[in-house]
Amino acid sequence: MTVKDISREELKQLYSKDYPLWVEINLQFLKDKAYEMIDWENMLQEIEDMGTRHLKACIS
Image (cartoon, rainbow, N blue to C red):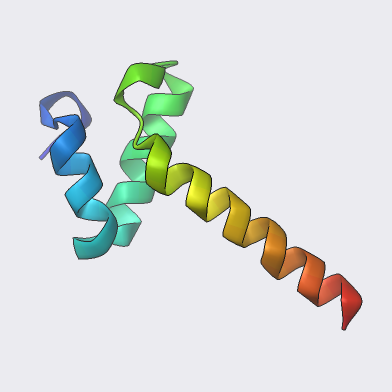
């Protein structure tokens, strides 16, 4: 499966099935400025979780 061949629904499914591939594809979409293809729901959750983890690390 290549970035050009994936649908938004397939990308959303990859989040739970193949996380490293999900990251790779979303990163490529960001680099290509193909914002309409990004799995925003899961991407925003990941960014929020990352911020929380970093805050907890700073506090401890």
